[in-house]
Length: 239
Ligand SMILES: *[C@@H]1O[C@H](CO)[C@@H](O)[C@H](O)[C@H]1NC(C)=O
Ligand SMILES: *[C@@H]1O[C@H](CO)[C@@H](O)[C@H](O)[C@H]1NC(C)=O
Image (tube, rainbow, N blue to C red; front, top):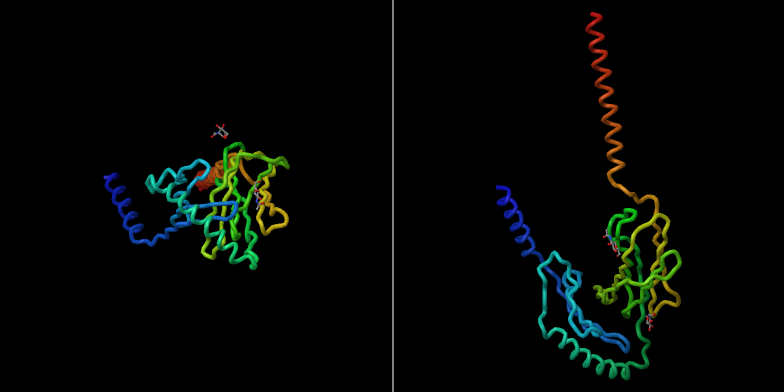
């Protein structure tokens, strides 16, 4: 019986998503120093060409049915880049009297992926958006010292033609630690820096607050019942 209900629920979810509109995006671009070919779906990365590893990468979460574009995906990106480089040379000549457009990031946010609990692995996220051209460089510090090991996604295009990039750093929150992410971009004369401080407002055990509160409430309630019973019996004795 339980199983039947579950299946019904799942098929309803599928119907709803089959009706919904999805937005698919394919991006190909190059500059003198950078190149990008990526596919996205509903604002998320589906695949991108890694020109260092010479293969198509599929950075998809484990809970979706994997989407793959087959063997030719990477090769077609290489062909695209060759054409792109030729076109950009021609454009460079034709447009040499026009200054290239440059927009500094309009927003940089730093936050944690999961709710902070001291001593438990977590991910710090530096979300940079509203810049043109791509990419940005993001570097991290912990208590003033440079840290390595962060990762960054390929630039994701926004509707207005600017880009978004997200840098991630694995970390274990310890009270008082201070992290920063510094963003470099062509249109910035100095890096844009955001600070994240592990504060005491985080908790080591989320259960303590509510359970103490409930315990005190319950004790008061029981005391009340005991007192009530006492006076009830006393009252009966008197009469
Ligand atoms: C936390 O991360 C470190 C290093 O990334 C790893 O060695 C450790 O096993 C992780 N601990 C847990 C509980 O996931
Ligand atoms: C990003 O870093 C690379 C390598 O260090 C450097 O060549 C490039 O100029 C940097 N880009 C920006 C926008 O600072």
